[in-house]
Amino acid sequence: MNKYNLTLEFLEKEHFVNNKPLRIIAQENNISEGSIFYLAKKLGLKNRTREESNKLFFIKNIDKEVLYKYYITENKSIKEIGEILKVCPVTIWKRLKEFHISIKPNGWKEVWNKGLDKNDIRVIAKAKKQSKTLKKRIANDSKLRQTYKEALEKGNKFLIRKKNKFESKIEKLLPIDYKYVGDGKFWIEGFNPDFINVNGCKKIVEAYGDYWHNLPNYKIRDEKRLKMYKKYGYDTLVIWQHELNNLDTLKQKVSRFIRS
Image (cartoon, rainbow, N blue to C red; front, side, top):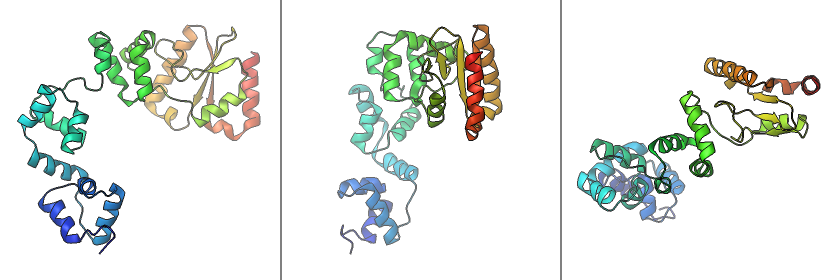
């Protein structure tokens, strides 16, 4: 007997007969998810995939009327329903689609209350891969939202992000009048540079990772990017990731660009 007093017979009954996912068994027996998976493996339980478990448990316990009651009548979010029914929210969403229940813009209630139009909502929804902080920025900043919208219309599915290690190393090589704007602070026709001179010189520095910027679609986009910068009178210095392997040569390259 293990310290949780759970046997293989008990786990098999709960998991296969009652169709409960291991995470649900863990919750009901006050055990962490990691511990229940470790215990199941130690006892030799043949585990189903999470998707199979969720599907079995969901179909057995939930019907269209239950979903309609929570989602439409009581106006609960998909996440809230998942917590009530102890089912993965993604499964709830799939089941709503199967029952042809219209999906509401859950998670964006505060945005709807701001009186934004549908096009603004579409733009904000496109930021689903972004952090919660960025979503709020897009929701509250009309200028950033317009920039995001224009970029989407041009087909640029960009990510507004924090400075990475490569860019941090590049920043140390640049004078103080070159500022990092790769987090969405500055845009040129839907393109977001990495560094820009803020002291009167129309100069841009781009940091290109060796893997991503050598992909065919990135090469096409980067070609358009440089043409757009040039159109607005900017000189651009491109620094590749592998150039950091020879700092002396790279410093000379940066110095020539700055003095030109």
